[in-house]
Length: 312
Ligand SMILES: [Zn+2]
Image (tube, rainbow, N blue to C red; front, side, top):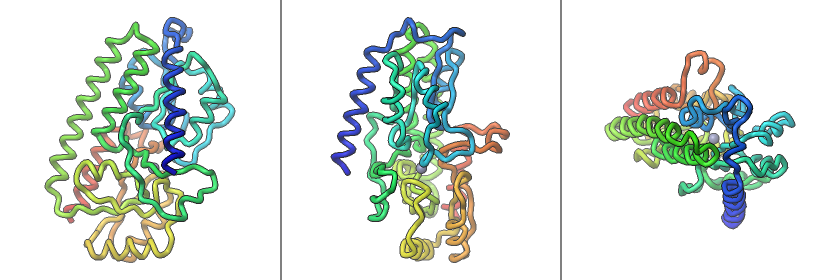
């Protein structure tokens, strides 16, 4: 598994290096004078919008209400990937990206793998998860965007990509990125201060999306499913989680808005706990959009939910 990852990351590195050096800045902008930037899922879209400001048309391939772990691009999506001036993705969670970039080849397109350079942690690993039908390995945890600290790295990578393809607006990209990174730093400090004071340190989540967040702020995540929410937990694992939750007096079982909360609800009933939302920001729902929620407001809600649960 590890050697497969090394090979894949070398391929990624090769692709992005080649595209970065052949990306032709002068021809990059489309007829309206703006860059066409295609991003994969919500956090990549939001971070890119924040940095690009008025200089780009930014779209997210994965629509509101869709869960990115099992998403696949359509022919229409492939056309967007091909015609993009810049393609921005997190890495790993978009198992389709490597293949899509190869078949929708475009030598002028700049590719940004925003998590590149971050030291990824190994996911909690179950034997049966290795034999996934789609052949993708989810060994490494992709959920770096859920750490307000690592999110800053992703914003910086996105800024570098936009500056490479459109150096004429370098100062704007730099200023926009700095402004947003300042907000993320404030968010990180609020998380650090708040979570340093909570009574309990263990929280139960629907899938293993909060590993980086937990590591950063000294918490322990106990996920019901693995690194991808589609992985149904084995009965003995359910029993372990129930046992753990009873021992640690866990009173809240977290679920997600884009995934069926059935298992979380079952466990909550079993231990006489209640459920609450902890949003892994893998996509906003239509309702989230109506409420004008964004990365920072959802993360602020997540912090409040964690504080409530950990202080019970
Ligand atoms: Zn996930």
